Length: 256
Image (cartoon, rainbow, N blue to C red):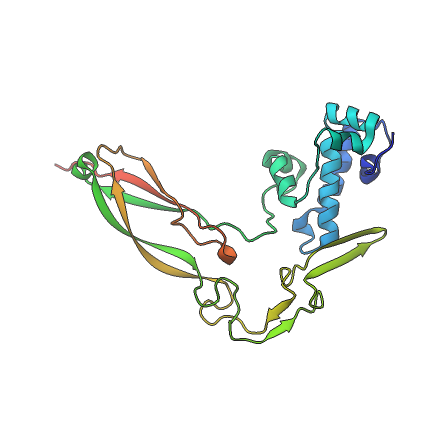
């Protein structure tokens, strides 16, 4: 077998290794290189993706057969591209599988996250539920700071060259013969940092505000119905997408 990527070598196994040994090695190495245990370590992140890719190929009978006979090139010819991002690994392997291995399957996010969804309980009278209504509500949400646009730094503060990457925006790390180059985790690839935190949000990039909304209740709505209002939840980090607002309908009981 010839290959540009030695999946057996990545897992530290020989060809012909049993499924049990493959899974055992994957568990050990995935625990070692998991991003939650190696924050802001590009070498560990690359190794985590490679280990996951090796397991993804060797644990599947068809993919392993193709790899054993035609190598990595054979997989590429069939359209297999492996994992480009850590999120791809976590999306491919279910959270139940990671829980079984003792690894957090959903706790890691390299990129700014989407805003959280918000739930709000709204009480209606029988008449409002039957005929429909427009109700005013007020919710507390986290919104992107308008002063710093979600960056968490004072716009007027002085720009300084990032000490991690020397202003290049990229960061390279080496472990043995393995080298990884990627976006600088300190400045997010910008090459520079501002020196002072934003006064409005204390450097958080978001702040809590009260928001007034009008909710249209359709006629004939049932008790415990949940209405979804898109993009009215918390604002995302660094201007990422907002979460959604879910309004849970509770119809008041008739009183004697």
